[in-house]
Length: 338
Image (spheres, rainbow, N blue to C red):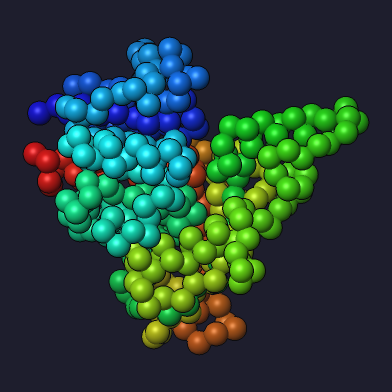
């Protein structure tokens, strides 16, 4: 059986990646519709190597007959259209932050909590987690299954593509300006991003954490285990694609590096690349365009009892967004809609 699929936000970074991923993985779709704002209506977007789709106006689109919606238009837009699509009978897999902490909406990473997908029947909406959360919990899941994780301390190094096309353009334009000695004017970011790092992603909250840091905390607990304590420092770095994370873990009981290494080797969606030689690790530049969550620099953390440290890298547009959403859709059609 083929399904009718709509991609909302089809002209954005994630929307384009969703279309590419649907094609690459030969998702069983008889019809794929590209949707975006009125100003993008009529434009064409690529679908696979040879096909193009004409973008339709989201505000005027009738979702009747659509089976699955892959959505990444921004939280405010999702808040308006997702319930409308769901009421028309579609299952919405939403990549924005709008529904993630709704108790009636499952928050899913297929390698971590696939059974949660069953909860989609409450609102016909499934939430895709934050990109930085997805890659971290994918790597943490096999370790948590081995010995329960008590505490996570994570510092992220997040690429500009997480802020959208305009953010990537700002990195490019600032880098060029510095080389030709032109003035650098931050517009998207709060400070210069070229040749710099900015410890500020999303808005500040009353407790001093940013909303991005809060997301990593609450989403990890919802997906993996509500007992885990998480503290994050999220940093924007001058990279176009690929998020990296330095993670320190404290476990409830003893776990050796070799036990952790074997668990990660066997884990779905994880690629362990950990050679203790020069270059024996994965960086953001190498993960762009790849599906896996890469784990490197696995070692004992001797500052706490039962501690490990590791380095996690993934393409934030693929596993951190588009691929995860398509994997949810694949699980949905194989186990629930068939």
